[in-house]
Image 1 (tube, one colour):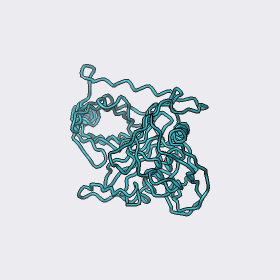
Image 2 (tube, helix red, strand yellow; image 1 turned 120 degrees about the vertical axis):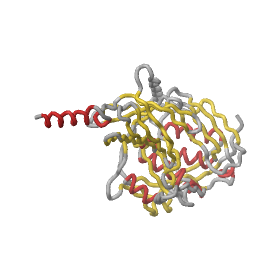
Image 3 (cartoon, helix red, strand yellow; image 1 turned 30 degrees about the vertical axis):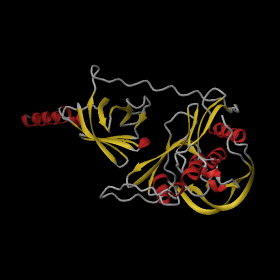
Image 4 (tube, helix red, strand yellow; image 1 turned 180 degrees about the vertical axis):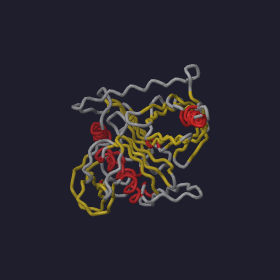
Amino acid sequence: MKKLMMLVAVIGTMFCGTAFGQDITGDWQGTLKVGKDLRIIMHIYKGTKDGLSATMYSIDQTPQPIEATSVTRDGASVKIAIDMIQGGYEGKLSPDSKLMTGTWKQGPQSFPLDLVKATPETAWGIPEPPKPEKSMAEDADPAFDVATIKPNVTGGAALQQLTMIKRDFVVKNGSLEDLVGFAYDLQVKQIIGGPDWATKDRYDIAAVPDVEGQPNMVQSRGMVKKLLADRFALKLHNEKREMPAYVLTVGKSGQKLTTTQIKGSLPGMYLSPGKGGFTLNVMNATMADLTGFMQMLVLDRPVVNQTAISGRYDMHVTFTPDLSMFNGRALKATVEEGTEPAPDLYDAMEQQLGLKLTQEKAAVDVVVIDHVEKPSAN
């Protein structure tokens, strides 16, 4: 009996007196040093399903919460994956479960980050998330109320920015071809008959809609069409032509897409360093948005969507680009020693997203420019 009581006491110590049995839900906070100090809060909570979930806040950058993809715990080891920003945290709990000593990783970079469990007295406070922008009425047909067009003389040969942030439409170093490609959802090879300056001349544009609310993608494209007609005197007609294209379908293993966490009607895309290559991050996007981004900004020919997938998704694909991509810019990734280079885009799309890109000839929409002028002064 005495031995049994001793054994029970040892077991009780294992589960109650060490980090292995402690509850780690709550707010964990620490400062990430990445050139400047960024305060990070990890809110860990019990999810709707069995297991743990987490929300991250980078309170010195944005009040926008970022939901973790997964939280896993193995004894004192805790891992938090945040696929939305290609990041994650790995830490080890102290015996009293009040400190996590660990590392923040994002793409190929890693930084030390220690998180302390906050108390009511020490908590930094989680900021209020921004209120979602009111959407423009679905039946609205907006134009730009005010639009400023200025020549960009920096000498850059590629589009640097084309965004609709809330109600502000911004273009940096964009050409006529870039604007037509966006407005009509085309790849440059689908734009026929433009003058030499359509590619060479570059512009910065700032514009605001004449209707309240945030426009959706169709409304955003429509406003740019009106801008082209009004300020560039653009006239064109549509045709169908057969040409080399990429066709996007679902791979043999099935799609591996993550439903978006973002509330809103507009998609986004950006390129960032990734493990062994670059990561293409596409947010809040339909398959039509994805193919539009791919043909406008990444690939050298039209992309035809044949996936039959509906809904909006967050997608991250890490790959090694070649010279047929990004308008021939030679993007070279820094690959750490011991790290395998990322696969090419086509293998990466199938392995990581379950989507297949194949090269085929296809009948695609083209626009033929009948008349265009350099933009009128403001």
